[in-house]
Image (cartoon, rainbow, N blue to C red; front, side, top):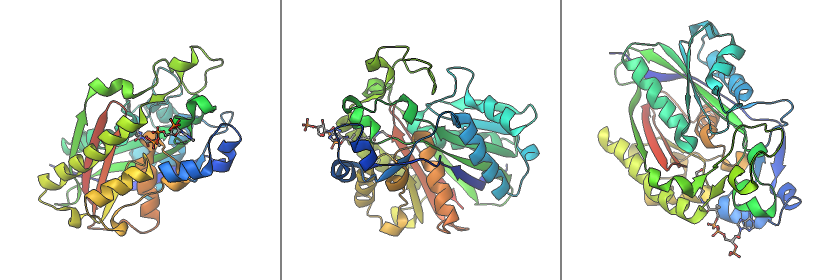
Length: 329
Ligand code: UT7
């Protein structure tokens, strides 16, 4: 049975950088409040005339494919993770397939919000281990900025989220002990309404199609926070236990970038050193399904992810859903 490993990574964020001071001009908020409660300094927002969720996913994918030393024609399957698709249907995976010119390979969309990318890695892992495919593109891409209430009414959500995309190529290897060791997936739908967008349709509605309160995302931030700081350590420990490791064996934990305070809470409760946890929410905000692949790609670019390292990906968010993946690089 082949193992699966991440052979290439790439990320793309739109050029427009929005500071907390910029947000002060749009709503009653302050740089101090945002930094203190979330750790975020800046986020990137698209110019929607020039970008799309699938288009950003394609840009990140081309970088990941090149870094894997592969060509588009080597990719067997696409897994596209987002909560902000270009259209209500079809999903973004088929749009990436067309934009890449990737033959008629299969494309699957995953709608699991913040944990979407880890779910995507898990699906890719299964397809590789059964021998069905050799190289699978897993993409997380989000355009949040066009679907948020950027007035004072929506400030508890809109200061947090940002736009961007990240991609990974998951490939087959016969090398023993290398690659994705295990993945762990959970959900608890009784909390669906704690963080949701009830009537959101796509990233580019021509006009507001529904009442604002059902179109824009709503979040019970306090309750999401409380569940996040419990579920993150739980699902990370689940992965460690499954593979006979302890928290000090982790070389790098890449938590979903929900809120810097959440990442710091996990770090403290798991007694991890600063160099064992990678955060970049300060620069990009929370990019939902894109946050882990952007962070992983950036950490890899900086030389923080090396052969033999134990890398842990972990996510929690809307659903609620939560998940982890343990990888020997
Ligand atoms: O992606 C995964 C899912 N998401 C998360 O994991 C997010 C989890 N939750 C959080 O990160 C935090 O709950 C928030 C950052 C969303 C909010 O922080 P908080 O410390 O829980 O604040 P709060 O909601 O309890 O609000 C405190 C105060 C309120 O004012 P009053 O009632 O005390 O007068 C809010 O109206 O802060 C006010 N507030 C703001 N003030 C300035 C809420 N948003 C803002 C804002 N600027 N942007």
